[in-house]
Amino acid sequence: MIGCNHKSRVIHNVDVNNQKVDYFTNNGFGNAVAIVQHPAGVYHKGITYVAYQGPLEDPYVASYNHTTKEWKGPFKAGVSQMGKNPNRKKKIDNHGKPAILIDDADYIHIAFGGHGGTPEDGKNPLGNHHYGKNLHAVSKKPLDISEWETLDNISLFGTYSQFVKMDNGDIYLFYRHGAHRSDWVYQKSIDNGVTFKAPVSFLKHKRRTNIEAEDSWYPWVSKGNGDDIIVAFDYHICRDNKNTQDARGHIPERHNVYYMVFNTKTGVWKNVKNESLKMPLTKETADKKTLVSAIPDDWTFQGITDVDPNGNPHVCILVGPDVGEDRSGPKRMQHFRWDGEVWLKSKNKALPRGNGDIDVKSSKEVSIYLESETSEGIGEISRWDSFNGGMSFKKGTVFLRRNNASFVISTLIDNPHPDARIIVGEKESGTDYRKMYLLGDNGAIKRSKSEAEILKY
Ligand code: ZN
Image 1: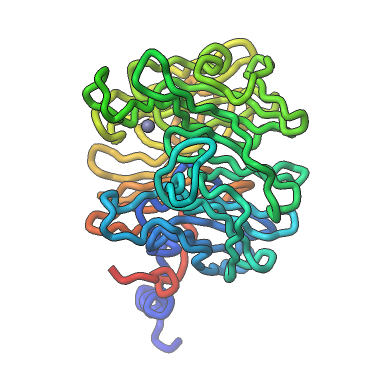
Image 2: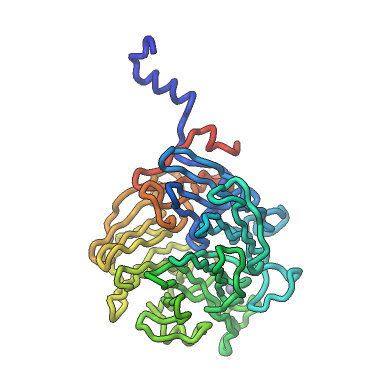
């Protein structure tokens, strides 16, 4: 250390040998994480495990040990049927990104790769076809992400996989059983994912009689209190492509926001007023019994929900004007809270536009984790806190901020360590690859550059 009284020089030398970056890998691909396929991460026994879509749309898993500060991976955990055909019109399908779960025997599971299957896979008994194959892969050893085995024990017609593990270890895999015109179902496993029972429909796709369209749904499923699974959902009017009533034909038009609860102990589905629901739920029953708010003119996207300790739900949905053929129109998160008698709609306008997840601590205390972008092009991942039940939100922690950037964001990591709450991918112009970040109360968890830079681009 002779002559090292110049502090900056010392730091420079250290940097050269062990330069740290704030992303853990640069091989995220496309919409590498999203709110719908979830959870994308889980904290378990001192380690955070994260899953995301990597090159060729294959699922990747990495882990971070909060005690030793060591990263492992990313490892490829399976091979997707999608992402391999360069001549396909839609270059990146994005529907098959992985959801992750750790069972009670410490094996790690992912579900990935599906977008409805194809006619070559046979008739879809609960809907229609599109692409890919929904697959289930399990780590070969407990808590070891380096080797995986793909099993043939879930329906390959699935897409938008969502995992929930109950306190007794039962595993529920929720997904849409095909393309738009398909039921939403769950499959249950009571043996740590070795076998799954047959799919059970809970949201019904159905031909409309008055318009040239079918009823279609986008639920988001999460663990509630005790034995409950809670569901926030919106409605997609799936118009026929050749449509005499609407010249636009099929568009990703979604409306309304709904909420219901599944008691996994009794097997009974109920609305927020504790009234039983006949399953699978139809549009008619949904409108009558489960509506949080009718949103007939604006378009909706991506509901999320959480409950307070008394079981009263908060529900958020992205809302914005119909801006034509894609969903990229400006949408802002709208918050609702059930006060025991009615749904209260937040009047707050402070929340920036963007997608994210909700964490409810009490009827009064609620936080929203958001990706957003300022008009100056500054991308940000931040938490917005409310102490009055969502009537107003104030900006709290900023986890990540970048000039000329925008992000894709995961849901909150399951059972998160405070240092690792969400996973985000940074969209960069000129490439489909994404730098991936693991963010918590101290910002991004860093990694050595040589480890994080897997790809050169
Ligand atoms: Zn549709």
